Length: 451
Image (cartoon, rainbow, N blue to C red):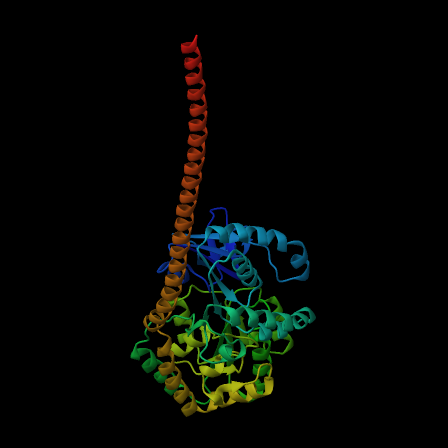
């Protein structure tokens, strides 16, 4: 079976024809679906890399049984008017060759793929990975705020009617984007290896060795493109607290141009305290980086269930985060602040710096909580969900095949009947003609005899 997977994610490709991701969608993600489907077509945005340097730090997304359909962005008004017909045509062709569609939402390409799938009568499923409203309302410009209500309603409609819906949160996205009547499951799209107890032991030893005047290393992982990860809030909170803190270093890991944020740090008077360190391959390199920080920040404006937070927790990191998305499902309430609140985050940073007992409690709590997101546990839930979807697609394809076979058989019967009726009609005509001929011959013979 073949499936088309759709989302607004931007992949990078080069002359070799290989596709790369900024870290969120390596080939390992496609293996989740390839356990059920034989082939995946990834429909998403693409950007051609001009040099090998553009691929630095990115992860390979290409691999066996995966191909890519590069589409223009639908995230701006001009493209919506000028490119939608072209995108629809490409999707119709690709979905026509697929047995089913899986769309990550919110996304414009995902929404368009589902619309086409519905038109073509193809089965589909959705993965609900973030909040449409939060992402656009907090994006930072007027266009985003104007489009937020539309995207919210669009995503709600898509999820509500979906026959299959997989959520990355336990409660938040389910409440905001409820599904009615379909099969649903809660399963984070984050996978971490089972953390060994030695990880927590090393973390506690690190915290124990810190004196009140020891330097504090604070970390954040997130894209530098846009402001959804709250980098501006982190910078302002650190600047606000710096007079009451010992030496502080703020390390940021993520793709994108850091110039904007470095300029903000300089303006806030903390430029020398901040380092933007690009991207690292997922897995061991990121875990090693997290082992080198004392406090992790996730002051996001918008989230689903953030991978980086869970990874930090799995390394025993104390975490401070906003109440965006599913973050409250992960960390203790004493570690939360509302999105955009600089003051409360600043106070929490100061508490984390001086209250070592509180840091140890959070380290132990987070480490234990992270075990809910181990690869083995999540793989089992996810595999069961996609297997159920695959079975539904397969049964539908089988029904279609049976229906087509029945229709073909019915046509054969119809054709045979029509041929029989034509033959019978022909025979009747021939018989009549023969009878007429025989009669004429008999009459002729009688006439000959009479002479």
